[in-house]
Image (tube, rainbow, N blue to C red):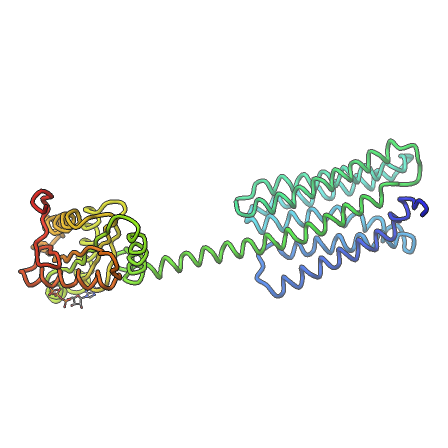
Length: 404
Ligand SMILES: Nc1nc2c(ncn2[C@@H]2O[C@H](COP(=O)(O)OP(=O)(O)OP(=O)(O)O)[C@@H](O)[C@H]2O)c(=O)[nH]1
């Protein structure tokens, strides 16, 4: 065992080569994902940002082989450009104003780069350009962080925070390097050069993962929104906006499962009397209007937990959770009476309803209850319509005492 100096691990050219390899890999992974997956505006600016990192590391790694312009100057220009490209991508991705504000980003980049060039003129200490570069990177990162905190997409904020936090850390590492170089007694060397590039490597990896994640999260969020819209469409009756037969049956099954452990619910089946005549006499559009008006009217009688659905045609159904037969009969009778007061402009006499009521009995399936409510409905039709009945052929009453 013998002590290995830290500088052996942080040999500048090895680190730059490693950094260039990581940056190029990031850039290629992002390109591949961008070509194969759906990406949002701004994505290709991020890819350019990763390649800016890669080219800068490569250029600086070749500083002994080529002219200073093609190595250090180009390398630092691209390093400073990276946060500007990420910001340009973020502006597009987050749909934030681009025009004038983006021009300010590029002007700030030119300013930071110009200051860095100036810092090499005259008799300035050799560490001055490092310090000025670190200030420039801090300035451009701060601008990026400020932009990120104006994000409107709440679901992306966590990932965005990670990205912005990494920029803040990297910028502070650069600043520490700048200050250390200025104050250090050593001249001509930059002992924190390797460490600062390791910070850039970490930043490139975090940038790669967070930007891909943000793209994925946004696509996922949009898919979830479309899915819930589709569910809404699949469950809703287009004409009346209430649950359709399929969804109503689903809700009834769910209620039946819950009802096994609690108070018994009841079911009403409601049919518009002589609706065919309304259609024939006034046309289908008037018929539709009547169906919508009836839906609204029935809704006025129901309580918050009750569910009204349209089974089809002129047939509706209501789920009354926790209602005993007496209360359900009361609700049915109130619906029949409430519809009689319905007035529709230029329509003439109000339409009437017939209702069949049935209770969920222990061991019943939803079909059993529906069948009994249907029998009750036909009993109500036979009894002359415009009334509510139980499966035993008893008229429902809106007077609770009388019904008891
Ligand atoms: N306007 C309109 N009519 C519909 C719609 N769906 C079904 N219908 C019509 O509703 C009518 C239903 O009539 P029926 O169920 O035969 O019976 P009814 O005329 O209501 O007679 P009773 O139920 O015996 O009182 C039919 O003429 C259907 O064409 C719809 O969405 N809009």
